Amino acid sequence: MNIILLGAPGAGKGTQARNLVEKRGMVQLSTGDMLRAARTSGTEMGKRVAEVMDRGELVTDEIVIGLIGEALDSASASGGVIFDGFPRTLAQADALGGLLGEKGLALDGVIELRVDDEALVDRITGRFTCGNCGEVYHDRTKPTKVAGQCDVCGSTDLQRRADDNEDSLRQRLMEYYKKTSPLIGYYHAKGDLHVVDGLAPVAEVEAAIAAALKA
Ligand code: AP5
Image (cartoon, rainbow, N blue to C red; front, side, top):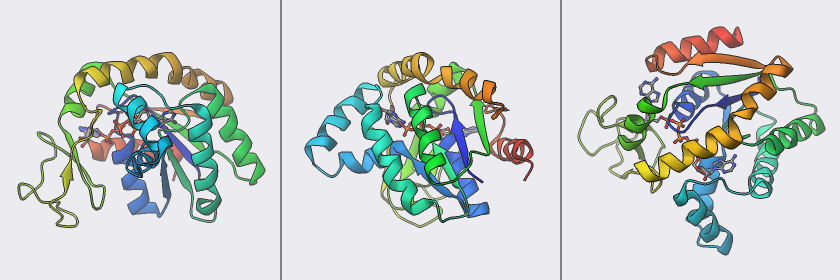
């Protein structure tokens, strides 16, 4: 099963993708994670990407389509792919359709995690993640059990993202409404869209996704 998780910054795409990986053995392809890996590589491309991400703008279609194309080569043999944060423009959506078609793969559903902007500020400014295993936390709603230590792997490398501040979030939301939200209509017209209430507790969102996918 190959699915897209669509939603504004902080809607819960990464959190739900990790659940699907853990419980269904799917592979998560997050362009945000790929770009963060590129920015730490120190290459010229990585430096350019870092500036764009910190401003809260979208990286070029060419770069992210290239990253997904490469990742899909190794992921397509697995038990299904979750596209997390990709596609984010109509050009990316068309490119994904082409890439899947070339590999004889189908898109089984698009989940839109719907939230309101007010909740997103709280989610984004309170978020931190484990630098070792990627577990996602929140200062108020999901703190670690032992302060400063990841519940899953015990690492003390807990990190906050450079773009998780109010200024950058405002720009990320603007980009979302201008460039990504047209995908809601695009996938609705294709009959692939399922809308899920992303404001519900994590377990309820997970159940709603399973129900939408009938699996
Ligand atoms: P990316 O890394 O994709 O970030 P994003 O879309 O802004 O989404 P986030 O990771 O911020 O949020 P999320 O929806 O995964 O929420 P999470 O589960 O962590 O992209 C970053 C940047 O990279 C972009 O701005 C752009 O520059 C670039 N980029 C990436 N892809 C690109 C592309 N395709 N094209 C061009 N540029 C691209 O949850 C957030 C918090 O809320 C956590 O603390 C979590 O614990 C909490 N939470 C989650 N669910 C719930 C719930 N149900 N109830 C309560 N709390 C919850």
